[in-house]
Amino acid sequence: MKYAIIGSGKIGTAIARAFSRNNIEVAIANSRGPETLASLTKDLGSSVHPQSVQEACTAEMVFLAVPFPAHKDVAKMFSNWNGKIVVDTMNTLDLSLKQREELGGILSSKVVAKAFSGARVVKGFNHLPAEQLGTNPSIQGQRQTVFLSSNDVDASATVAAVATQLGFAPVELGKLSEGGTPLHVVGGKPGGLLFQNLVKLG
Image 1 (cartoon, rainbow, N blue to C red):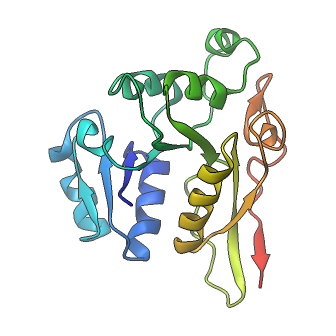
Image 2: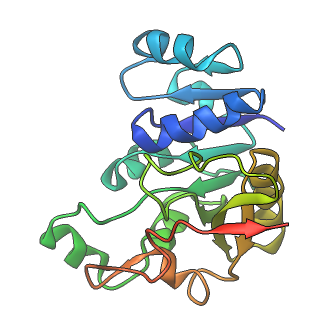
């Protein structure tokens, strides 16, 4: 399976670093073009490859790590995403009041699922600040937890397997509107699992 990260900000870079640390090939792209990623990919190592957004979107699993309003631009790359897995790592804490009101109380991942027609959306890797994601000290028998939620059981299990390869301990929460709600900003307030830096023993 081919993996790609759309977005080279703090979260995108943190996820790319996790791939690099485990020597797993991944593409990374941003809106400014692959030439702007040269220094970043040099720092991360040979397993991280700069690409255009269009190229990166051809991967089977795409980590969406752009500012929330920009997800619409990425979604337009295909009229139908034909079963690709889109991992929604975005948060809406930085949205203006007007932008939050435009969501109309709908979970942001449901908005993403509607925009990415035909994709299988999994919410995950968004509960921690980038400075903490994947940076826990490596202590034997402990792995940093990442929470996953999706309306597609198979997609969630596939992302969980990748998270395990990356050194995390995935915890699947079920459907977006049920167990996934604590991973979202609701009414302008962060859900109960946001910012929880937990580890799993064993």
